Image (cartoon, rainbow, N blue to C red):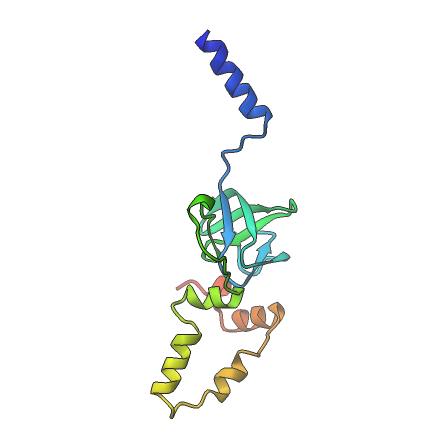
Length: 159
């Protein structure tokens, strides 16, 4: 009788789509889902903060994942973290949510309050160029050219 009961439970779990797969969540503002596990592999799609991914494999710092829209690719481990468990019964009070940029800064220990405090303590610092640099955008081709010419990253010469 116990064997039949165990068989039925296993059968139901398999047929009801039980999955022991692990899930990850994007922890940075944006990151690329790449075709191969390397930084300058072609980009399949861009992922944003909070996107959920199913973990398929792991190789040398890269997770092979599948998005909720069934797009598979590779994302660097520095851009994701295990999906936190939701304990809805334990949450009380009003629900609030930080923006993606606030979360990206907070994960680095930096937020608007820290910046405001620093600016107040150091009024002599000129932030003009910092603010301008935040608006600089370089395409992947320009970054790859820079790394190749400088023999950096994947193009580093063996010593």
